[in-house]
Structure formats: C-alpha cells, structure tokens
Length: 125
Image (cartoon, rainbow, N blue to C red; front, side, top):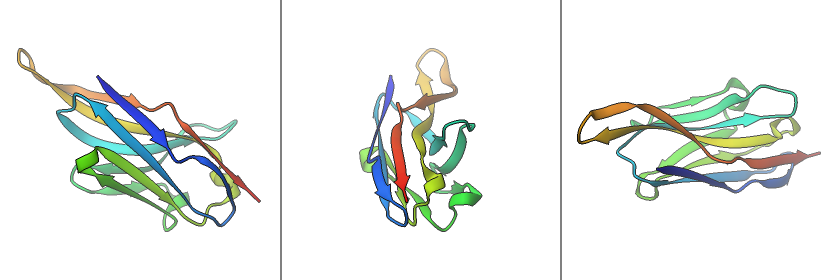
C-alpha cells in the first residue's frame, strides 16, 4: 500500500554535506510521522531525526546542530540535510513512516510502520 524510496546516499568527505530524500507513494490517509534511522556495522539501529505531521522535530544528540529534517507535503517527501559530516556518521540510513489507515467498514486503524530499503552513506577521512 505504501512504499518508501530513499535517494541521495553516497560517498562524501568528512566535513562535507549530503541530502537524503524519501518519497512516499501509495494510499495514504494520515501520516503521523516520518523519520530517519541509521545502522552502522556492529551497532544497533538508532533514530537520527523525526518529524511529525504538526512539524515537531526530534534529533539524536549526536547530530543536533548538524542535521536538519524537513518535509514537503505536496510531494509526500521527507529530507535529511546532513552537514559537517563525520566518519562516525557512516551507516545505512533508513526512511520510516508511521501511517494511520482508514477503512469504510472499520474506521481508523492502528499505526502501521513502513520502511524504505535503506541508502548507504559513507564518510571518508
């Protein structure tokens, strides 16, 4: 029903910038929140940044002041602007969306999480 497609990953030098994009498509009735997670080799997946439908944002302490999450409602797209990249930012970045669906027979359903396939971000020294 809902597909998330990430783009913008790649190789960048330390101190450089990169912008990730995640476009949502399909039947969407209500998006409660969208966000970015990342997972580095040997580490657990962690929340990087999230934005709610109301515009509230949340960032991991390690990226505050460097990363900015934003949303384009007309395109159903969320962005992650990554500045002052560090080697420790190297990871696979995953887009996440929390969607609340509607049914004519049952009404509003529970929140359902959707995940993108991930995009590799590699920061070199």
